[in-house]
Image (cartoon, rainbow, N blue to C red):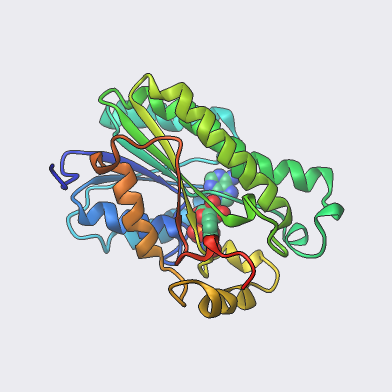
Length: 259
Ligand code: NAD
């Protein structure tokens, strides 16, 4: 078994800054020798992402702007990637968004627009991205997405994002079934709470971190790097028999009932 990703190319979507889970994934893939392609939401992220990637020694990365709410932008991004590199071997989808007012209070108060926005960016985007990326995985490939326990259980303040994650989790399984016959695997990582730009929008996030430190079997939270190493497993041949699966990287918190 070869553990190196040398000669392989992976698309990482969703680096915003050094705290991003996508950045933890990029570092793990880089350490394994992969060539990386980064996509960012809009031009505001271009320079910060390029500056971060400069710190990855010897990385010959490519960069594309890609707003996942725009079907044409997604199609154009992958057709440019095809022109520039030909084949890709995997993709990490690390993208989500919901309005701040929908991440506090009660789920029952979610507006139609807030519901649609969260589902559009956080769930449907995996479908359109997989549709456009899979044809570039001519040697087989692996797609991963990032989910959270709030899609499986009710988590205070997570609200519409929990419902969007449930949709994302189901989409991951349907995509795994569709793309499996083309040699493309699709899996999800359910990460424990990590302080990132997106997490800032969730009400009372600090108390969630504290609760994990007190109650999780490992009595601590997880890091971007730990998620990154599980992403490496799912994006490499080590996981070649695994598809349609969700792996919790959450210090074991998901196994708890009443404690
Ligand atoms: P982050 O803010 O660093 O990353 C979110 C990314 O989504 C950003 O790069 C942002 O630009 C991008 N994005 C938003 N709208 C977009 C659009 N229209 N087009 C393209 N990109 C867009 O935060 P993160 O916590 O690293 O989030 C990454 C993923 O991990 C998300 O799916 C999030 O739900 C998931 N996740 C996070 C946690 C956590 O506690 N931080 C836990 C479990 C799962």
